[in-house]
Image: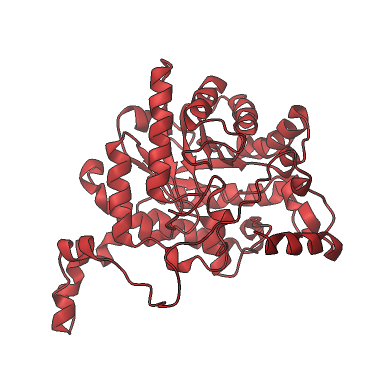
Length: 398
């Protein structure tokens, strides 16, 4: 059992239950005016707890079983990176996030997951000991607040993800590990399958993918992980928490390379009907922890929960205000809209963008830099104009 007294994450997954994760807090709260794009840090947990609490509640109502603490990029080195100045310490933000997640999880059948992610220190070639110390500082709060399980998420390099898993395992709590990579593997070319095997050997009971790519790409990548883990004679559960953006034109780095990132991505947003397809595909390949990351709003999670309602034996509370497959349109005043109250209409729809001069695909940036490159060395001081000028010039050639 989890510390909350509910059935724990591993017990649920071992029983074949579908566990639904929540959505992308940093993007959702940036759009609502509570997160700053660029640093993407989660001080809103302490600054504006009412906003974070409300978003948790909306995801819970939409069908999420996991309330992930809003602690993305809440390590001290990230909170202080490139001139970011906050009125709260990392410990205060992490504690506030844990309290909010627990408060809302207790209102339903929710579990609380404490999360850590990649660090500026790793990109700046700090040692294993130094990077693990950063994880440990966040972890101390999660242990104090007795979260139900732990997630090491959003890792581009499997080595750093291994270090995170090894640190989280010291608590004795269940550990999930999720990388933000696609079928081409991590930023040093380690395949998804090899990444998964290494993470399971490091101690992760759940492995998978989050962020950077669209749902079908992420499901494909998790399937590669699953095949490799099984071939190695190992056992694990699998998770997927993708973007809510279409990314067929992305390269190894994912949506960060898209010229629309982060302020022009709206035309790429998946519909709720796309989410039905995603949920079914994830389920069919054997993934049982299914959620979302950047771009996911509560209605997306509701669509996942509705698609898998038969398997879960329940519809989410939010479905009270949503007729399945558009059934609510039967009540519309216009007859041509009432004619859309059917599944085949929405499944077959090819949405238009309304932008006749825009392309359907973009040309991603491909700077080819990763850990160890001078351009990725991080600093506590604010980025200067002198540092920006060569980047502006380099951007003109890509």
